Each structure stands twice: as structure tokens, then as C-alpha cells.
Picture 1 (cartoon, rainbow, N blue to C red):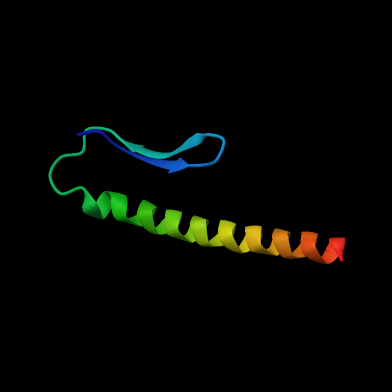
Picture 2 (cartoon, one colour):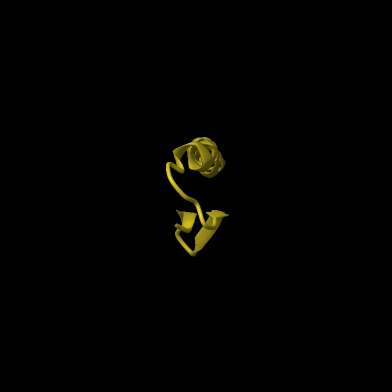
Length: 60
């Protein structure tokens, strides 16, 4: 089975990882990437909030 990890962004879809020909229980292979994506999402969320706050303060 071919397994792909994608991140859907507002303007595009980014391929994060590709595991061709995985057999059996592929959870141990994919799980670290899922954790990395959760961390990436958290970092992007903090950066977005910081940018919004900076823009708000600059407008004040």
C-alpha cells in the first residue's frame, strides 16, 4: 500500500511524506510524521497569532 501525508494549506496542498509499498501495520512508520505535523501546526498557529497581534499593535 502506498501511503502519503499531505498538509492542506489555503493556497495549495503540500506533500509532507511518501511511503511506497508499506505492508502490514504501518503505524510505527507513519506515527512520527503525524507527531511532527502536530508540532508544525502548533508552531504555525503561534506564529499566526503573533503576526495578528503585531499588526493590531501597529495599527493602534
